[in-house]
Image 1 (cartoon, rainbow, N blue to C red):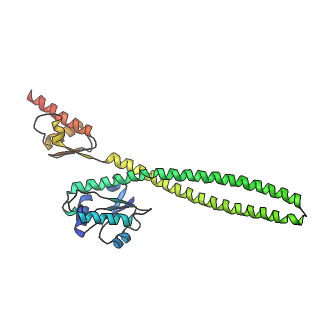
Image 2 (cartoon, rainbow, N blue to C red; image 1 turned 90 degrees about the vertical axis):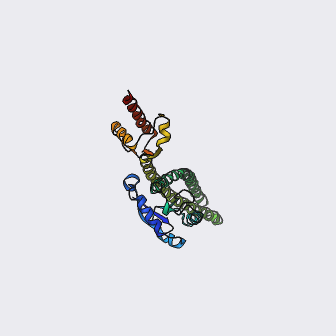
Image 3 (cartoon, rainbow, N blue to C red; image 1 turned 60 degrees about the horizontal axis):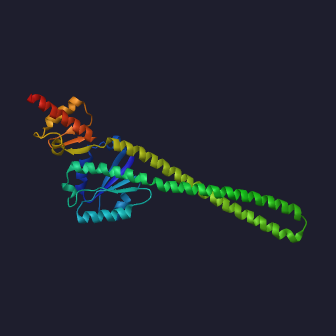
Length: 286
């Protein structure tokens, strides 16, 4: 599970967020667990509270002071190991008085945005992989150069054996070999560390890509009933009971309705339901 923590401004916001997420299946749907909701406006407290987290959501109020606090928290808390994302609420509304449905939806949307941002880091990793390949070529060239120098040294030793005035040249060649060996070892160590970092990042991205695809497939959309009904018929908008009956007839999964909205994974399902209602009404008229 991905450890997720949410920072809010006050204790009342904790209660509001707790209600908004209590019906969200974040674990089964997204592989996410919200381990704590932290009420604070203090940067130091916030820093201590997020230690060990994978994701931090900043859910301050959408008024001016709330946005300014979110900006400060975002700048102070962002780092290499923790993903920071701001939860976006309608401007000018306190979290305490926000619609719980919209709050829960934005929590989901924030997780989707995190998944998309993670995909963007692939380009950086590819650049690092390119650098690793370049280092590997340099190492190979140095090995060839080192082997050549060793051969030259051996030839010089055979040719200049017993000639004292040529010892200085041999010593110089040996120093060059030692220097090249040190440089080679440093390059090999740097290459090894980069490979480890690249492998770790690739594994992390693969994990996030899988979770993002699962999350994207499970997200539901809200469709305005009156707007979509006007595209199908000029009759009076159907009731929630009519819509639920049509959903049952079609056997659609994960489609629910109210008097004003239809919640569905796709627009196609909405039109299927409304067209069935229209056809039933026309048959009843005849």
